[in-house]
Length: 198
Image 1 (tube, rainbow, N blue to C red):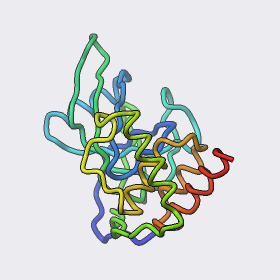
Image 2 (tube, helix red, strand yellow):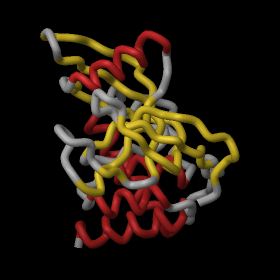
Image 3 (cartoon, rainbow, N blue to C red):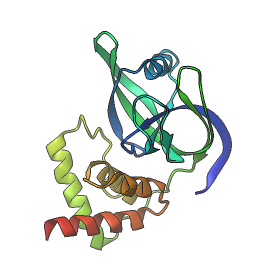
């Protein structure tokens, strides 16, 4: 993947899921290391990184994440009960982890390179099935789950949104995140959809 030269240090939140640029992800936070991370992010508006877990669990000993994840920012939060934070995050850009270290509280910190955003790409006519299915999904889930703007003529946006919601294995979602070819991603997703509808 082509990465920008700028390296930053980012707190990492390894999860059993993949978040794609432009997506919204609600999270329930209760472990002390992540409560501290989230409180800091709320206080100063700083981002953190979400990465899928390659080995390990979400709780306990720090998990080993895949090397490519997505930077997110908190857009809303609530604490319905003491010690549990509900946050809503907005995903931004992808990054590549170059080095990691574990803080004394168990929080994983990553030295990361930004990955350039994929350029807007037209959707080939033979892949319009994916667009129609995404329209139905958004109508069903509602605009809270898929806030606008909706960019149904961009293969990057459509591919990311379908990758989020379709019942794909974690490793496949990770492959789709790491891909830099939006039309190939759309072809893979369209083939998956055709197999489900046949």
